[in-house]
Image 1: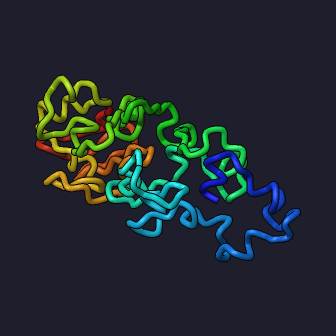
Image 2: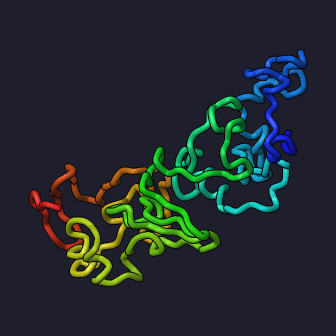
Length: 238
């Protein structure tokens, strides 16, 4: 199959449009394991886990991977496990148009961010750009280069290593809280991070939402009530 697909061959010519026999009288289901048509790991199965990451080439080789960070994106270590649709057009089975057959760029995993959290994303020369993910959460301004090690401040300013100029670019009154009150991220995002800046709630991180849960303060989406970092909030607007 791999050789045929990479050289322009088409299994349907002999096995039929639905791969159920065609002129050969042999259905692909006779040789392949049950469920193979919708099992992504049947063709793309990697060695790290059952997600199919890192995906193998269609010649069964995982050696020449252009994007070694597949595993980090689909396993949910720093966020919920992402599906393929975040960076690719989602395929649902072997016969999805443009998947195995009628693919104009056979042998390449085309990038398409429009179905994911970063619909304006682009990729060029090993760098993803115009991203929501890897961004500060305010604009589609994030970027990441393959092979880079990621830290909190790689994507957005933090309360320990960043400064006033960076805080001023954040939403609402971030700059006021972080510069004048020396507030730390966990004080308003307690379900996401702790006082040591450990990520404790990956399901709340990089999920398309702004997760706000202050410690000791009630936040209604627009304003805060209660005492925090030495100040009393009374319907204080964000």
